[in-house]
Length: 260
Image 1 (tube, rainbow, N blue to C red):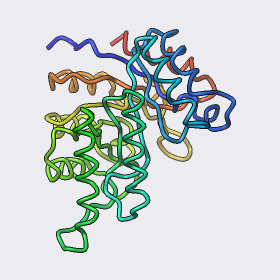
Image 2: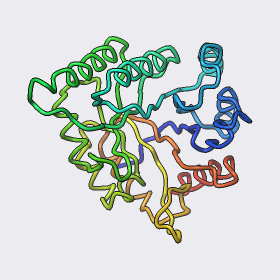
Image 3: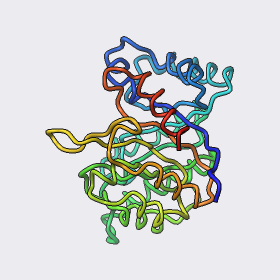
């Protein structure tokens, strides 16, 4: 099967320290995407400094530049805390205001089937219904070392919620760091994949660490081939740290994909 021509997105993780310190604004990401010929940017709730001003300005900038945009939150899909349930709805509203069709979420602890669990499930259903009303999708990802980090946990949550508004995000290094095969994850979750976080992982004295493409041990070519074999359309999003040279990490990753 020939390779699918996919859109490439950069994300704030390449500039994490700069964005969190305030030495860089979220409005500086889109010009970098254009500079390297990528098609868009993933934004995150943790990078806002003055959201009321930045969000509408960012929406206007992305629309003017013709760039794609996605969003990611660290508030979990299943949550027993009412305040965090409200926060997740706010994150979704912000993603919608930005014009993002996809928001990445982690699973969290799933509710059981007892009456005491109904408020959690009702909150999750309300979120999914709102996403569907916006024409958006939630991309469910496994986190590193957290409860529910196995590919079957992602599959089980998607099947339980049973909505076209929720799908899977394949994070290549998260599966490796969780001692699972990312190619197996692609095969298992193929019917639901709507998004990807593409990154490598390198050996360090502290164990495996995420890195830019081609700087580690992950079989990126095999993974991309498996993603293409799904026949599904979704972007490849670079989600690795800048390692002291953020733009260099982006350029090297683009060159690595081109060489494939």
